[in-house]
Length: 228
Image (tube, rainbow, N blue to C red; front, side, top):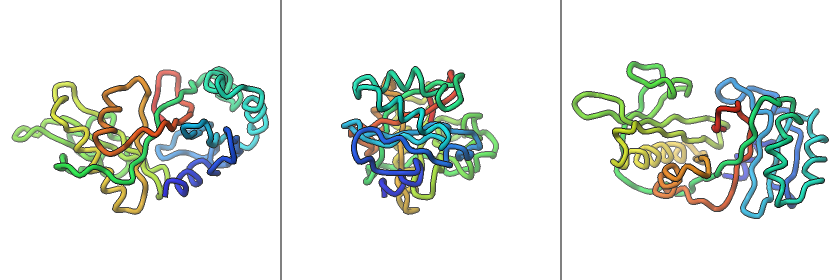
């Protein structure tokens, strides 16, 4: 299932070895939220993977990758990739790429609510359809939530956030496992991405059945953002 999702998301998978640069029309089409993603890649623990860019930019990016030693590749992409795909104002970052084949069984939390419903925080409103919300018993005050990024019918990314006052209750992991189970039941693979420095997010992923096999996500975003 993961291989099928990566082929659909990147335009090619797997790599015959090293970082394979492919030109894909997908990088010229809107992503799930209507925004753009001019460069997107996934690599395994050995540095093998696929970097997808617009077809017209493929040769320039492939030349950069071919001329760079593997140990220097992340830095080279960070310095040169935005300009090479025509977005010099954007930021190239590398995050942790996780997926789950068996979400942990735990007590579920939250209820599915329309993302445009009352009392939904602004960060969850762009997610299509329903979001998973945990509220304070009795008051209905928002505590934590999950939104789903439908990158492709075969793969859906989970985004989770918890209000500071509600942390330490285990809400995030319970929400993530409930959302992951919905994705698996729909026949797709649940994806979880986070910044390598975000230890809290890493702990949630570990506890929810999303191990870190050393895979990485490489993508562009606005300079102030770190989200794929």
